[in-house]
Structures are given as structure tokens and as C-alpha cells.
Image (cartoon, rainbow, N blue to C red; front, side, top):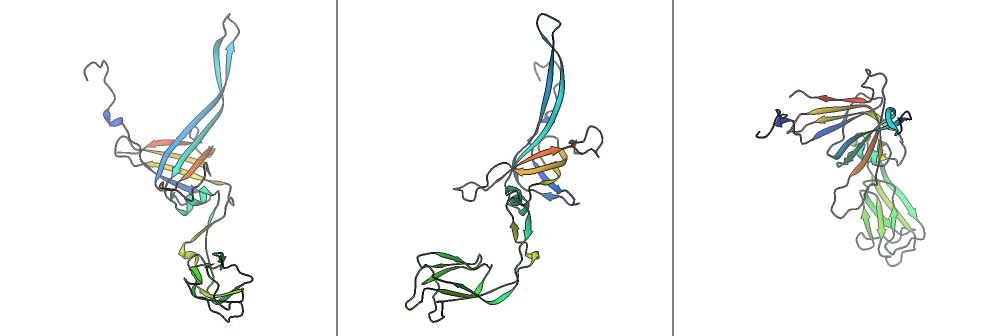
Length: 261
């Protein structure tokens, strides 16, 4: 290039970073993709003690001593996998199970018909029959009540003539096996989510690199939105990086590795 004195670096070294992120929970031998992710950054901070010499009229910096090193990872996860939802709630995902039941009867006394909602404590209910407390009056769906069969709720919207003010709901519910993969996540029931984290470069522009962090503790760093006007739901996560003294000297926190072209 005109005006340059020294040979410049190759234009191939410009990079637009893209990557896939994998997490291996401690004690397992598998890696899980965390999916589409925004704003992934690793920040290394250093604390140091400074010594200024008093041997001259004006104190001059003589030495700095590093006393603390921290590495902090920040990510915005965009896809709501079970793992990511669990991370957002500081919890652990377990499989939902339900035993099959036929003609389950649930009774409510002194019900309020002014659009109040009552839980059935079962999922995916069917063959629902709603009557008053003594079974003398049958309620009509969409006239006297509305039904959320999948989540198991009924809403009373009208009291039919002759009803006694109590309610009896009879329904069937299917077996739900762990293999169905319906996650149930306890809030703040797993405060330590630690494991290996790997960021594998997939960019088309520039060198591809892989970042390996041997021991990272992941925690939510922001609130989780359950209602939004237009924005996609996201999970804000931060990761504290710990030393793994089983690794070679100089690589205890992790390393960045260039991937062959």
C-alpha cells in the first residue's frame, strides 16, 4: 500500500466472531450446546500492588506486583433450552412425570362463579364432567365454564340454575413418562452450576479459534422476562472462572487454541 513503510499484516486476520458454545456439567462426559448466543465476552481483570521509590525527590514507580487475577465470562443466551431456562432460574431441570388416572374427582366448596379459576392439579386432562356439589346440575363448557385442558385449570363464568354453590370435576389424565422430556425446574434449587465451557469459533471471516475454560461456575446475571412486547426472550448469564491445578502450568484457567484452516 502506498505510504506504508513496513509490510502490513494480512487482511485475512480481520475477523467477525461467530461461535457455538458447549457446556459440560461437572461429573459428566457430555457436552451440551447452549445455542444461539449474543454478546459473549471474557474479561480478565488484574489487581496489583504498586511500589514507588522514595530514593529521589519525586517518587517514581519502581515495581508492580500482581496480587489477584480474575476471569469473568458474560453471555446472552437466546434459545430457551431446558439447560438455559434452568440457568436463568438458578435451578436444575428434572423430567415431569404423571401417573395415568381415570375418573379422578376433585371437589371445591363455596365456589365463586365470577370468572374465578380453579386448579385440577393434573396435566392434559380429558373427558371432563363438571357438576354442582351433589351432582344434580351439569355445567356446560363455554357457557358455564372454560377449560385449559393442557395445563389443568377451569374458569367458572356462570352459575347454572339450580346449582348448589359447590363444584365437582371428574376427569381422566394420561401417564406422562420421563421420556416425554417435559422439564420441571426448581427455582434456586441448584446454586452451583459448574463445569467445562468451550467456545468453538465458526466464523467465515478471519482465523477460527476455540476458547476452553476448564472450570466455570454459571449463574444468572439479569432478570428473566416472562412478558415482552416484541423482543425475544433471553437469558443473561455470567461465569466465574476457577483454576484447575490438574492442567499444565500456565493453562490452569484455560486456553485459546487456533483451529486449523
